[in-house]
Length: 187
Ligand SMILES: *[C@@H]1O[C@H](CO)[C@@H](O)[C@H](O)[C@H]1NC(C)=O
Ligand SMILES: *[C@@H]1O[C@H](CO)[C@@H](O)[C@H](O)[C@H]1NC(C)=O
Ligand SMILES: *[C@@H]1O[C@H](CO)[C@@H](O)[C@H](O)[C@H]1NC(C)=O
Image (cartoon, rainbow, N blue to C red; front, side, top):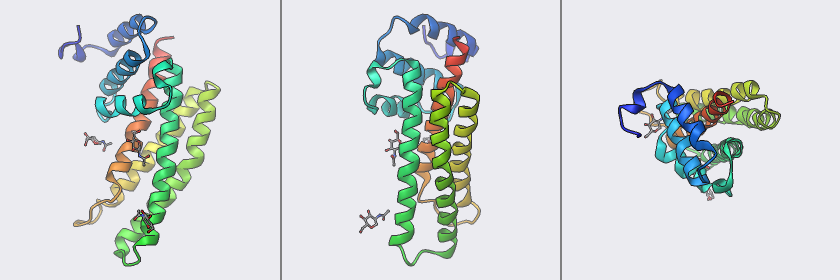
């Protein structure tokens, strides 16, 4: 049923299939189906990254879609908090950083610091089913990751030490957004 050609059909078909399968499948399949839809909705979401991330979350195999949504937001929170701490260490450990890299890292530190209250707000919004607000708050975290990464591209010859982390924050954000999208489309 899931041939390559199918994936080019409209998403609404995916949603219908998804909703039909939804009640009868177990958690592992729910993660897989959710990630499949998510990776189709946003090409930045890699199926493998999504399934690996959600499967590693505690009790995710027992979760329903709403539970998976909450888990994805929690994963963003861990990631963002950890990345902020990592940038702090990078700045502290390397006393001879190039001034350009140091300035960019300071920018990223600020961006990730601001992302922490945003993700806390997003958790609240999601809990209260204020999906529009959660969407705005998570989008701003994805913007922060992109802005941080782009900062290193302004000058040639410098490589971002945060590429993997920025990428993970962005992808986790996209996963959370598309879970909310699925929730609203299957209502
Ligand atoms: C960020 O999240 C991804 C997916 O959950 C994980 O593989 C990665 O280790 C996380 N990074 C940090 C620093 O938490
Ligand atoms: C910074 O230094 C501490 C102590 O030596 C070390 O544990 C940590 O891994 C270092 N972190 C980074 C990002 O270099
Ligand atoms: C993250 O990394 C993957 C694989 O390396 C890539 O395909 C994807 O476009 C990246 N996403 C972002 C937002 O940079």
